Structure formats: C-alpha cells, structure tokens
Image (cartoon, rainbow, N blue to C red; front, side, top):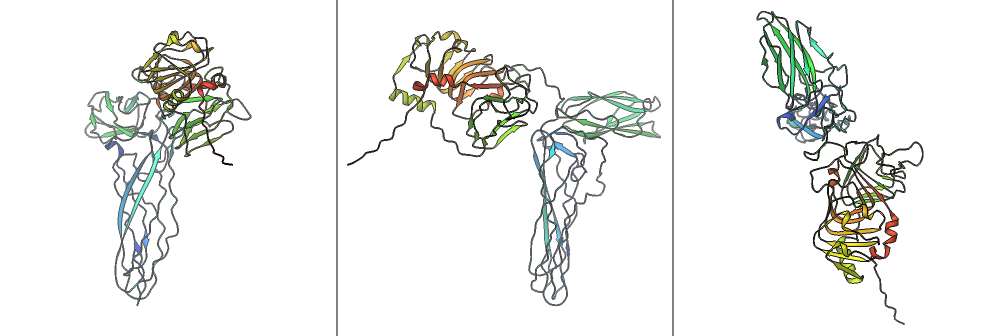
Length: 541
C-alpha cells in the first residue's frame, strides 16, 4: 500500500485481495506424475486437479503520494506429492491498497500474511498416510511476521497496487514402496449387492488400464462411474464392469451412482494410482531393464570433473568376497559406501549425491572443487613416443616382453589374443573394444591405454589390468545388461561418463560395477607407466 500522508487526518490501511488464482494442473502438460495422497492439509491443490487456492492477504500503509513496496514468502502445504523429479508451481494475484485521507498521519501497520483457501475447497482428513517412504515436501520459506509501518509522505489521496507470488517445490524418490489404496477409505453408501465396486489391480498404475467391477441391485438399472479425473462419466446401465486409464498418477475419488430413475445411491472409494507397481520387471538386455545402478571402489580414491549421482541403497550388500564391508571405522559391518577398504578422497567438481550411502569410513570428501588432470591418454602417448623406448605392433601376438607397445588404429581384444606371460603396457591410438573377460591377464600386470573410447561388451563380467581411456562404454553392444562388472586393477576415464548405468544388476542391493584397485600391478609397471617432469635451473658463478 502507499505511505502515510502529511496534513490533516491519519493514514488509511490497505488490504490485499484474497481472491484465488488458478494453477494449471500438471497432467494438462504431461510433465509430471503424482505418487499418492500424503495426509497434508489441502491448500493450493485439490487432489492435484483443479488447483484452487489463494495467495496470502496483506495490509499496506496509509495512502499518500509516497509509495512503498514489500514482499514475503509463505510456507504452504499440499495434499499431493510429485514423482521422480521435483517441480515448482507458481501463482500470482494482484490486490489494491486503499487510499488514505489527506493530512498529517503515519502509515498503518501492515497485517501478517495469512493463507485462505478459496470457498468450497475441501480440507480432507485422511485416515491413512499413503505415500512412498522418502517423499517429502521441499524446503519452503517461513513468513516474515514483521509487516512494518507505512512511510510519511506528502498529502493527497492515492492508492497502491499489491502483488504477490506463491511458489512451492514438491518432490519424492519413487512410488515403489507405497502401499496399496485402503479400501476402507470410502464415502456414501457402499453396500455389496446394492451399490458397490472393486478395483483391479490393487495398485493401479497411470497409463495402464484399470478394471472396475460393479455390484448393484437388479432394480438399479441406471448406473454411472465418475473417475474424478475430469474425464466424462461412464454409463453402465445394468452392466457390471468398466475399464478406465488414468493419464496421470494421483488420488482419485471414484464415484459409482446407482439409480432407478426416481432415487439414487452413491458409493465413493478413494483410488490411489501410482507411478509404478512396485515390482521390478525381469530385466533383459533390450528393452532396458529397470533397476538401481550404483558403483563401488575398494582401496582407492575417486575424482570426477562434473557432478556425481551414485545412488547407494541403505541396505547394501557385498559385491563378492573381495568387498569386505569396510565402510565404517567401528561398529557393525556395513556395505553402503562408495569407497571401502583403504579409502582415499572423493572429490567432484559439481554436486555430490550418494543416495542413502556414505563416501567412506573416514568420510574424506569434497564437492564443488577444482580438479586438475595432467595424465591423459593423448599426453601419455606423446610422452612415450618422445621419451621412452616403444615397439609399434600390428598384431597382439607380438606382445612378448616387458615393454611399451603401440598399436595404431581401432582394436578388438579378447582373452585369447594375448598369450604373453610378461608384464606390459599397450597403447591403442584409437578405440578399443573388449569382447570377453580378459582371464589371460589375471596373473600378468598389464596396463592398457586407449586414446579413444573403451568399449566393453555386455557379457564381460571381469577385467584384470589398469585401463585408461578418454571415455568408457560399459555395455557397448546392448542398450543395457544385468551382468555385473568387476575390475581388478583400476579404471580411469579422463572424460566424465555415466554409462555405468548401463549395468543394471538384478539384485539392486549389490553394486553393478565394482573396482578393486590393485597397487601391485602399478608397482610392477611403475617405470613404464609413469611420466617424468624435469625442472632446469641455471646457476651462474
């Protein structure tokens, strides 16, 4: 509202309009899916459909030619939760402040903001909380109770405009852990043999067909089903079944009206439609299976030159006997960490998200930090060409001694291709495709460096050696695979990669990718794999 006037009289008090803005429901754009009723009070959303509510009312100072402005945020609660990704909804309403009288006076004290649902908006009182564990309303600001006083200005009548913007972010992880709808949540008269219905499946999923079996008295021959999703009601007549597809997950109060033309009975049951049915399908390489892909490193450190999302479950189990569960300094054995054993530091240049897990027992981690990388495959190849003795080969059968070998061009590698029992370094100036588990390198210290992409076929389950590449594709010949991958040695990709998500292990409590850093292999190849940097200083006497 405006500031207080000067002269005769006192400033008036402005009041904001409490009219309700309409927020377009998300199903209209198809950009979001709900996961269920969460028991919060209804405010801006009405079961996530019509979206009727209001911004908080506000008071302003007295009228005058001097104007003032203020803004605030209000914490709001909603009766729906989003699926998978958080989203923010914003509404705006504009109100008018009343003008004050001309004359002397100070501005009125602004009123505290209040939230007033629009008339007719229900405030449900749920009997059971039906929402996934881990779901929550996002952080919302706290209202500022200090509205302040209007300023003193020149005399004269005026009015001031008031506007406000309301926004809130909602989000949750998934609906897999959500329980089925509670059939006892009903209203009206639901009696078997008179007017009632059942829903199948018990946990319906959006964009999937849902069956409704109706049980009504023979005398009631004019029956309809209203699915509470803004679709047209379905007329059943004397029929006993109907199907419907909800275009979005959410809470729907489905109403069956049983009538004979002169009288009618209504039976309403709450149907909770989910993002998914809670049962992971049997994974196959194509189409891609659904699962939780995460990776783990033993006796090593980890740097990533971008953000990292590694969703570690709280109830993790070991990859195999090599994964000894050293994720805590003391206490019971745990496997829910990213770096186990003799863990180093975990650093990322962006944000760091580890799900329900931890970084390591010592918890040495640093996000949003600068990471400098000096060793790259291209730099290493240039260095060894200039400073080290190398042997250029055209066939892998030429590997026979402990030295550095260079292969020009793309290369396909299988266990049978290498018969050498000596340690070696192989540099591939191109892309490298590994077609099977390199069991022939189990007792050999080998380092394989590729200046291009390291392609690992989907059936490869174990690799022995130190592998360095520009980028890595963990399932190069399939969209994804359920085969877990173990690397004994190390794996370095100089460009950040998320293709480890292509390894989707069926048992999601275990990591899909496990790297056991073997420093003995480094020690055997130290002179061949290392690079030296020199500084020269001239001394004049």
